[in-house]
Image (cartoon, rainbow, N blue to C red; front, side, top):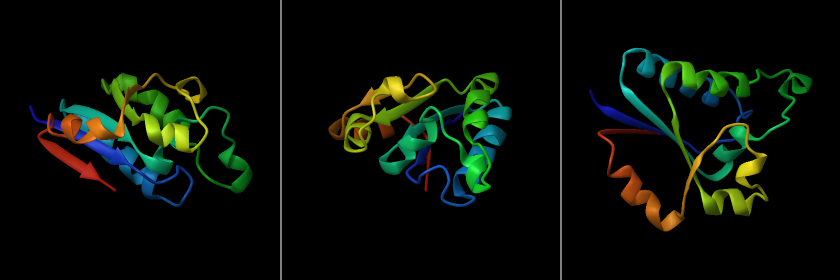
Length: 118
């Protein structure tokens, strides 16, 4: 079994990108692969609590993130600086995440067989 790290950098409601990545993540996990997610930059907004994308006619990706546990996707990482630069704390997120400092991200990435970034 290979270990996959999916890196999300874009905000959740900036088009179909995040939705498509989530579909790929769930498909990969459905085939019993080890899947983890790393949220960087504006990607941290994907887990922000109290989003209301329906007002803008967009799909709610937060519900899909909540389904990750069903697919055994439990390791979700975020960069501390990405949260701080956007005025967020881990308490502002809808799921538990593991935090890493920017200087430690490269070391984290080395632990995966496949990295899919967008």
